[in-house]
Each structure stands twice: as C-alpha cells, then as structure tokens.
Image (tube, rainbow, N blue to C red; front, side):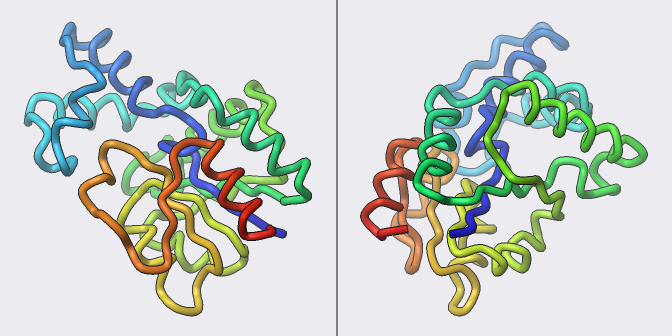
Length: 196
C-alpha cells in the first residue's frame, strides 16, 4: 500500500514553530489559541498575519518545526503494517513563495526528515494547488488543508483521504469521501479498520 502525507500540520507542528519564531523575532506574545480562535487564516489579526508571513518565508524556520508527539510512532506503525510512506509538501515547491530560497527550503526539509529519523521512502515537493494530482499515485492521503482535502476527495482521485483534525479545519464539518482523524493514533486505527 502506498500512502502520502503532508508535512506541516500533519507530521510537523508548524504552528508551534511559527509562533516561537514570530514571538522571538518581533517581541509579540501570540499563543497557540490564535489558530483555534479564528476559523480561517484570513481572519487572524492583521499584525499576526504580517509577522507570520515574514517568518514563514524564511527557510530556516523549516529546520525548527517540532514533530507532533505521536507522529514518529504513527509513521513507524504504518511502516510495520507494510505501508510505504511518501511525504508530500509545498515546502520549497513554489518559487513565487520562497523565490531563490526554494532550493534552500528543500535542503532544510531533507535535513529535517533525516534529523527526525522519519521512516519514509521519499518526499515530493509539490505546489499545494497540484497536490491532488500527485495524490492519485497513492491509495491513501493524509492532509490538514481543507482546500487540498476537498480536491483529493473528488471521485477518481484518492481511495482513502484522511483529514488530520486541527483547529484551523474544524469549521468544515463532514466532507463526503473524507474521514477526520484525531492524531496519529486515529490514522493508524482508521487504516487498520479499512484493512490497509
């Protein structure tokens, strides 16, 4: 069985890294509740949006992203179940976003995967607007971005689409063809139930 999963918001806790970076760099005091309080990124306070935009475009941030506490365990469990895992990320995929730092963003991502000893077979750097096209190559996809999940769940794209439950995607409710999972324990349980 082939599976793909997003990095930021699924394996790596980009929100924690971003908050640390923004608060450290700009002397602000934003906390993790900021993402839970606002239903969409566009509704976040303007000051936070501006700071986060500056910090997120810096490829060095990608090295500082902590793993979600159960991510390594979950990936190891999936590999033990015979599932081949490939990460798929928008990190460094868009020259428009990272500019001439795209290559650096990719290198930092590879280093991050190695340093965290993630048991994956590879990584695809894909523009987020095209993730659903590449996801067709896999039987299972795990994602936290609602727009990407909706495209992946369209008929004839991906057999099993799992939405990693996060504060920023809870406003969506149920999405046809998508199973919402809570953490990596939920991922493992869902795939065991499906016999993957």
